[in-house]
Amino acid sequence: MKAWFRSFQIAFTFIGTVVGAGFATGKEVLQFFTRFGHIGALLILISTLFFVWLGAKMMLLSAKIKARSYEDLNKYLFGDRAGAWVSHVMLGILLCVNSVMLAGAGSIFSEHIHISTQSGMLLTSIACFYLVRKGINAIISVNSIIVPLMLLFTLLIVADTLKGPGIDNWITLETGLSPVAAWMSPFLYASFNLSMSQAVLVPLGSLVGDAKILRRGAILGGIGIGTMLMAGHFALSARMPGVQQFEIPMGGIARELGPLIHWIFVFLIFAEIFTTLVADLYGLTLQVQRRISASRTWITLSLLLFCFLLGQVGFGTLLTTLYPLFGMLSLGWLLLIIRNRDLKAKPPLPPPA
Picture 1 (tube, rainbow, N blue to C red):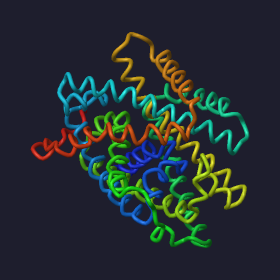
Picture 2 (cartoon, rainbow, N blue to C red; picture 1 turned 30 degrees about the vertical axis):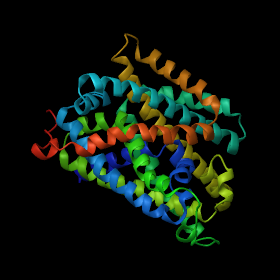
Picture 3 (cartoon, rainbow, N blue to C red; picture 1 turned 120 degrees about the vertical axis):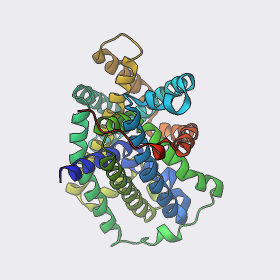
């Protein structure tokens, strides 16, 4: 029973790390899947298989080499020199992604609470700074509460969608977009999100160490991500093309369920953005601390300031511009994870006593 509980904790952390600003708000689902019409569901299935397979592989490999951070994993995959450069690039990408998430949090405050975007970003930064100092156990605990609630409310939106028009759009919706772009989408989405989740999943895999728990957690987490993707795609497809006008599409849909459900769902969207932001900043802080002699407090504050300044560009603009580009950059990392066969030769070592 304890092993299953630990597996569910890993699964919820996996889901919570991937379900960030773009996913929770619906922007990512629109960008990578729903806009491609009726083949979006098949693209989601492909992405889900990647999350299950490669999420497990990443954590098992991290446990095997006892990686302290994602740089250790990158050096193992690419070699010492190239791995260090890959980690530098990933550091820059994670900073930009965190800026997107901080801007997404600001958009929630602006669209739904009628507080200025800058004020929302500032409040989120203060809360994030406090939780980052608590460490990875706090991140696991928060995700164990927020992710099940997010799954429940996503299913409520699906149930509401079944009552309205357009419920067959997910299998009939046509698109004039390039087939090449459509079939690249699941690879870009999976590679981007898996490479970004290194900041949390690598130290998590090394901390847990048990192969059975890690593999089960990856399977549960990958299926959970796929379920939420499919639910979001179904709800968004039924409201196409009008839903594209919202910065927070899922928040606009939740408003249809009534004031109470709307406010609860908006809170959960914010919570998912917040937990991913905290997890990534925690990994970034540890990574930067290995390179410069500064206190963790000042490093975290500096990272938050950078994200706050870049986030002024705007949530929608940052997401639609940066995410596909970063997905392309992450493809090389994805291919090396796929090609690595070291786990077949030797199972991961058990955690140290």
